[in-house]
Image (cartoon, rainbow, N blue to C red; front, side, top):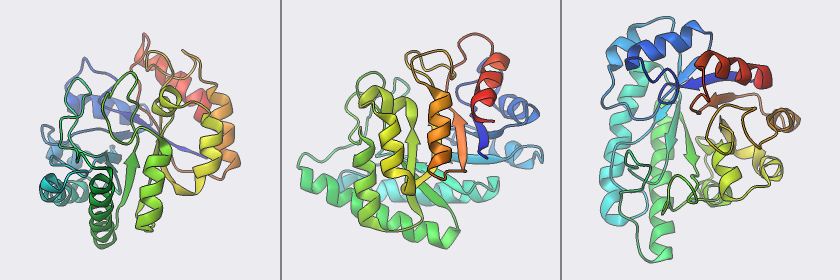
Length: 257
């Protein structure tokens, strides 16, 4: 049985953020969201009806350039204090800051060896912090063909190879089915190949990034494959409703509930 969450950055967007979170909880879902710096964390944490399952686990800097690594790790440490206040045990790591247009705006080392070694060092340090603070980090791949041109971990395998080398149960894979479908396809095989690394799943349909049932992805099949591989963790809808948010929630629940 999956635990179902909604991303507060993509649903009920006409409401103030704290009201979005409350509305998601009222509908019976867990909550995740992206950046925390401009949110009323105290108000969210004080609401006993709300369970936060995931937030972005860094602030700025770069995981893939030596000159940006210290700033990146400082942001990781800052976020851990916020996660503790929210009682949130899962955090998301990408390679650095993404702007409001979805474009990476952080430093990237020009030489591949420097890029990979820096990322490895940063994730090893994150693993130590995760052990100390009892959290899990999900390393996220993002598509470069539609949303995040220039992002440096576009393939699921890119994230997995880093996770393998770090070798910590605290550094896992955030599988985003939407991004995987756009960047490489063959999502069924991806799930089967890398299921042992999974700690979190994001879903949205293609094209349009709307809820399951609005595009080309066979989400009932995806749900079956996840169950077959033994995954029973969080599945979060990170999608913009095609029309009505309540209809989007209903479609999501029909597939994964």
